[in-house]
Image (cartoon, rainbow, N blue to C red; front, side):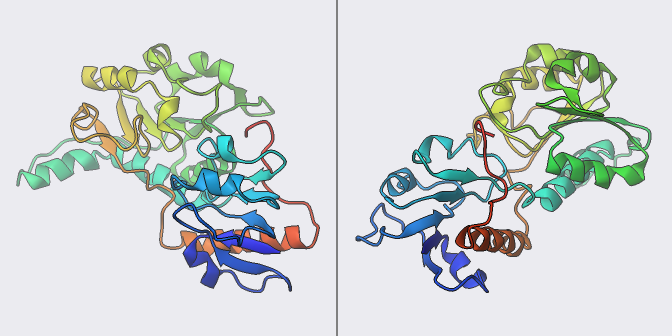
Length: 302
């Protein structure tokens, strides 16, 4: 069987079962008749504009495996009958480390001191301790679990929210009651019809004064205007790895909102990620080639 992966994957995938041919996912929307026998594809991150047409033109396609935990960007383009698998577990280390670093940076006012440094100003201001904080993790999947693990040494109190309520984990409907008690809110939910625009003016209004909002999920889960209004008021601060729109235009008012720290959707991008990702993708390919059940199969768009 044929497997199509991004160019760097051809050299990274090793020890695959006999009979598996690894080829480069084509660019330019043309594949010159080589589509027959392509049963497993790993689209490049960001989904090039021609990729939907390519996926639709693969008559033998059975599996689409993503590099991302969120699948909102590719769901509309997965052909009927093909199985979609997400990247649960791929980004646990990198995104959870970004979230922990962002929380600490905001607590210790690192962005403010960076601004002082650029202006050659020796200004002193008292920061905050993370110890004893109430941290609300909104989206307690594998990344949420990893965030919690990394925050444990700081002796914080953790509250958990997920789409499905379970022991120790609240439902999304409980957010209005949980937000007023949270010093830090970490957003990790997937983008779905139910979560789009979830954090609106009403929910931001429930956050306590001085709280920190951390978004490592999707920008569209947040009402950007409502968030900026709270930032401008000085009532809350935010660390954002994702925004709506994305990328932000050069003149977007979110750039210069007070109390915000923005990174350009890089939480999952580390030097070790490709090695880690292709190790897991190789295992998926081997399972598929051997007729074993696949991991991370997406059900009901999630």
